Every structure is written in C-alpha cells, then in structure tokens.
Length: 298
Image (cartoon, rainbow, N blue to C red; front, top):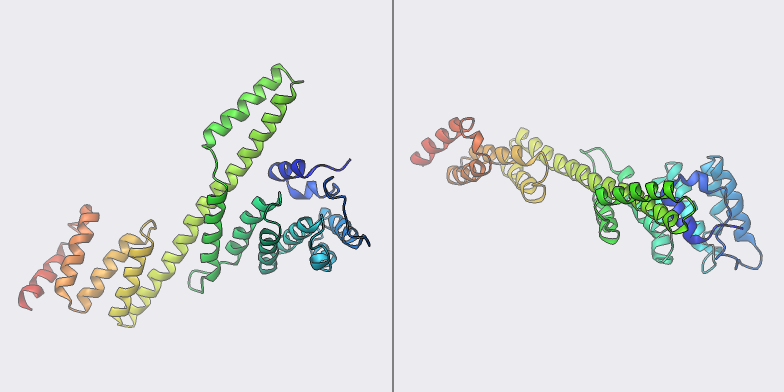
C-alpha cells in the first residue's frame, strides 16, 4: 500500500528524497484526472529522478504543470519538478516551481521544504559580491520567512528527546507510542538543522551585501569622489552593523570627511567611533591631532 502524505512528509525530513521517490504517490491521492496522463508523467518522472536523471525527469513533468491543476497530484508534480530543476542546477526554474507550489497549494505537506528550498535556490543564484545582488536580498527575505513560519524548539532539548526515546525503545521496543515520538523527535531535529542553516545563511548573505557596499565606497575613494564614498560608508553603518565591515566603514567615513576637510563632522564621527571602539584611541591619535589642528584654523 502506498505511504500516506503524513508518512511521506516525515520521511522527507529524515532521508534523502532520492530514496523516497521509488515509492508511489500517497494514498490520499487516488483521485486522478480521467485520462491518467498526469499520473503517467509523474510515475515516469519518479523513475528518472530515482536514477538521478534530473533533466529527463523535468522534461517528463513539464507537460503536467497545468494539467495537474486542481488534481490530487498537483503539489507532487510541482515539488518533484522543483527538485528536478534544483538538482540539475536550473535554479531560476526551481524558484518558479517552489513559488507556484506555495501559492497554489499552501497547505501541502511539501510547503515547509519548498519554502526552505526556495530560499536556497535564490542563495545559489546569489552572485559575486561585486555584481548585482537581487537574489542575495531575495534569499535573505525567503530564509527569514522560513524562520518566521517554522520556529523550532531549542536544539539541545530536541536532542535530549531523541536520546530519551531511543533509550526507552531499547527497554520496550514494542511500544508504538515511544516509536512514534522517537520518529517525531528525529524529524524535529532534522528540521532544526534546516533552521540553523537558514540563520547562518542569512549571516553569510548579509556579509556579502556589506562587502559589496563597502567596496563601492572604496572605489569612490580611489576616484576621489569622497562625498559619494561617505554615503556608501554610511550605508554599511546603517544597514550592516552585525558584519565585519562595520568597524572599517566607520574609519572610512572619518577618512572621507577628512579628505573633504569637513573637520567638525570628522571630529564628531571620530568621537562616536572611539565610543564604540575605545581600544582604537592610540591608533587614531594622529587623525585626531590633524582634525583638531585644522578645526582650530578653520
């Protein structure tokens, strides 16, 4: 008998999908279109996918995108097609499929994975730090949505539950309640790993955006366009205070003001910088002396 949608959803959290796709569609999906064309495409695509032939799996499923609408296989088709695109590194197409699934079948058991993989697809499309960052920003946004929609318990507590039910099953291996709670705890632990990945990915992507903005400021310094450089240093300070570029952005802002001979503003900015980084006082003494000398003569 084919596995239920609940079983499939739990399994997706625990084992690789390639291992799952040998199975048939869920028992709740017995109402197919009259011609059976959607099921035929889906079953053939499952075969291709299980053999890691992702491009042929996608080709097989593409005709079913619209014919599967409002059928019991709609989210299965969209999710498997999204996976096929993702595995074959066609990330823009994967974004489209995961987005369709979330919009068309928001209650699907694949919704959680689709939201995570939507964010990850944008992350894969995120460019080198010097280039456009549309997908970097979208990845941050979609990972944030994922964390908001699927908050998790403390990972230490979940790990403790897994270990507890593992030990209880050793004592009483026939206890169905222990077995079910152990499986649920394992699934929660796996989802927690996705949450941890999402949090770290947001940090990495924000570093990339900060680096991009910081280096634009540096380029303006080289072009002697100090006012424009200051604007971009301010952008780093305002938007990315949690990144490694915050401290050098403060120093760059001071340097840009000094080069513009804005002595009063440079002195104020230096004071704020030293409040944040008092250990830099000796390092910045020469800059302070220069500011005070010129401010007194202005």
